[in-house]
Length: 294
Image (cartoon, rainbow, N blue to C red; front, side, top):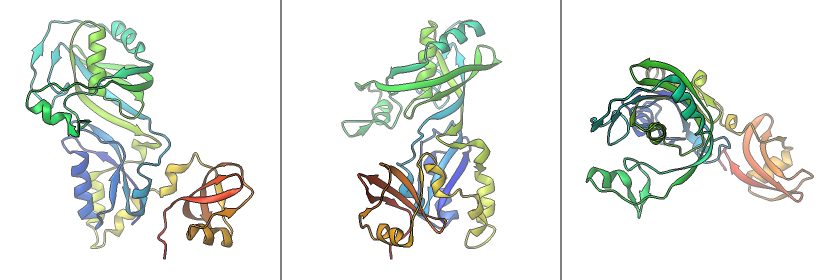
């Protein structure tokens, strides 16, 4: 079983919980994921199954889109509802004020990773120090926000907003930064990822549906139609239909002289996806194969 399985991650599950469950259900240890989601978050979690695990670090589009909910006037140590409220303030923020504040976050900025995160400093995850009540010096990271808009008011001092951002952006931190810009505090009360790279909620399957399909037969074949082909993540690359000779040489890792423009190509042979090849100065070499060498 090889391909990309887009899961609509349920609330309360870590990304690794989902992988562990599906490794058993799909009878394979070869499952990787692209873009971790915290337990509180739901939505698009792309899983790379079988030989597709080779593509985990290769997708070209790393942008993420989220629908987040924030509540002004409350703060928690983790900046979400995974911890107890530690501070409250009287506050009244209007939609107009919030819209104006959101607009200031468009573009590039520096974001400080939260203490309650898996980011490592001196080889240790920050959350381990945070659990001991320690604060560790962190280096801000460059992030890019390409779209951010107010969606609706969902409660008293509670608003939903959408954001499209670069890989590595912490929405929890963004929520606190938005509040700080308005002179107050806030925490994230909900988060749903609606798109991860080229994968959307429209392509996603609930964990319940995947498990039901996988358990329908002993070999989990009922779940196989839910997988997207591995080449779906490389749509930005031009296609190269290889001759028998070129396919054989690439299959065995042999550089080959071919008149091609310099680029990375999706390589096919008889409409079967072989992998990626790199063309430079008229020489084509294998970049990554997604079929087994025999």
